[in-house]
Image 1 (cartoon, rainbow, N blue to C red):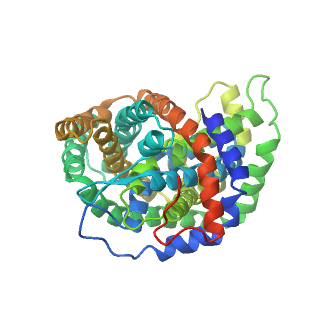
Image 2: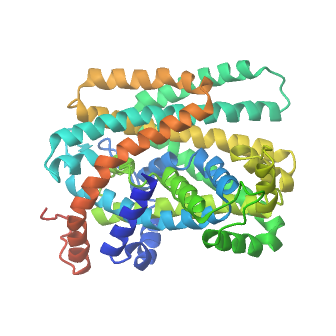
Image 3: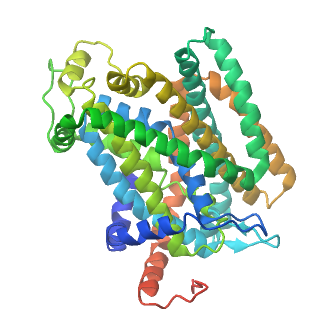
Length: 459
């Protein structure tokens, strides 16, 4: 599925004339200029900045830390190059998804919008059954990738955080307290709706993102002399097969491509159509603006934050492809995921790195759960025809699943999340490819000045 998303992204990139590159100035300037627009208090819509924080909260998660470190450990530094390629192509998918999302959304009587990928599946493909199927898949996916995966990471991060503070407690005790806290806190956000979610992400996302970026920059600054070597490793491993050690273990180009593309997709979620739900309630939104916002989000999430994590790992001195391959060939364990990331930070920042990374893991995970609770609720609201009983029951089940995620084994919840992602992507990618001509026509009309001020578009 990762390769399919990669190929679809490449197809759309060519079809849209490399829009994500030719419009760099536009999506950067537009995004920054929209950051300080005030909320509309008249209804349940949100500002562009709020929707940006909501969608970014969903994508900035444990994959930005553990995922990047895992990709490097299992397939070498070349995976980062293919992660960049994946992100570049994903920008085209994210743009198409969100342009279609605004073009096909409808305004409800209460002033809110009926939005999400379901709308272009129903009104673009003229298939209500496929739209309902997608909505149901999205609501179930929210249980996996948006709940169990992230709450599991939050709980494990809490264990490390408590131990880093020197508090003596058994693991099960910490997990139990974490489960109770997360259930209550995220339950309030889940039942509080879009406004409660936006208030949380507007405050949390800028802080946690900037805090993590500054931590990474600090490590890279201390190891600045190793940055050129890190980039040389990324590019050399992207195309050259690493020598096999002991005749059994080696890094290959195919491994680098698979891991890089996989974690790029997992990180920014382009191709799933989930971000359309986050942007659908944006006030005064035009298709062009939301498409640009989507590309900006992918840039921040994958190009910026994931690259900083990679540079921390590659400049810290903890990782070397030769030693990792030798250890793997000898059947020895090597640090991967959070363990490798933590070791990389500790090598430069000392023991305080444990507190830093544990806190970031908790914040990343909590914000992702909060946003995915809205994605799932929005989907079940569509599938049920805005049945409030169904919506209440869905939110209740979502909240009750939170403590289970804290105690599940990590391998199980990650596999579950990946499987649900694949199922969700299938109908969405089909729709985006079929409707890509509509997006291309919109781009042409926009460029030629044919789009009216109200951004109406003859679908």
